[in-house]
Length: 298
Image (tube, rainbow, N blue to C red; front, side, top):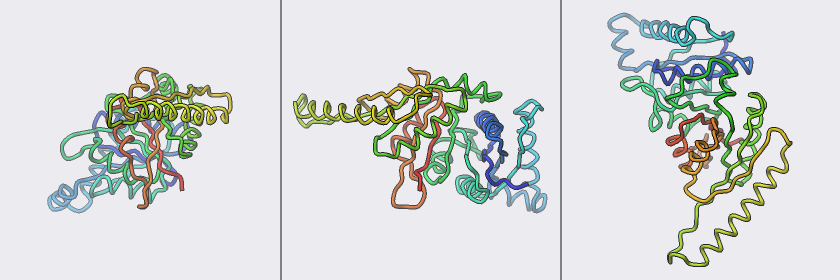
């Protein structure tokens, strides 16, 4: 079958990737699209298997193992979605991005951390590299989350949706996507948050720094309020301006306000594709919830 337009979920056979698979399946069922499961074989292991068992033996084994993993994840009662199995050999980040590109995948779903050893998915390695190069949205699931049994479970997990915005105009796309998700899961409220890093004055307590911070807060509150006023009344949107370290404040808001999903943007550079900014990276490193990372729009 063709995987074009499907969701793509890399599998490393760990419990965290099992949770990601459940999120991917629930999302695919809601969107009415198929789901492609991808496992990536280590080149050295593939070479050894070919010498011992013949060409293609490891691919066949990986495909059977992936099919069994999918069945076991749903206790033999898989969701009513079309599922394709893809097996690749090479470096996982490059292969994940290649398969996503060649299959015209619309969303990538993967855990922030996974197995250790030969097969591993954890932020700082495979997930980080994928996020630095991706041109499609990536739903990053936390390692301790076993995943939903269906869309109703997602509604219970995502009580609020947190959208960090930098007020440059790029945040409008994040807000639009967050609103679509909210509508799909029953109207979860949105929190639009802008975090201001305080000015570091050379002389502690200098009045100039305090005045600048006050002016920046006023300007941010006005811009954020204008953004909220341009939105429809539903779902409910709460603007929030804070001072502090952006990543730490975002993670704190998510915890304190039961925001089960953070919709964050990936920053662009002059190079092709998306490049993950330092704030986005740190949010992914410290948060314990779902993060939807959106690449810049062309």
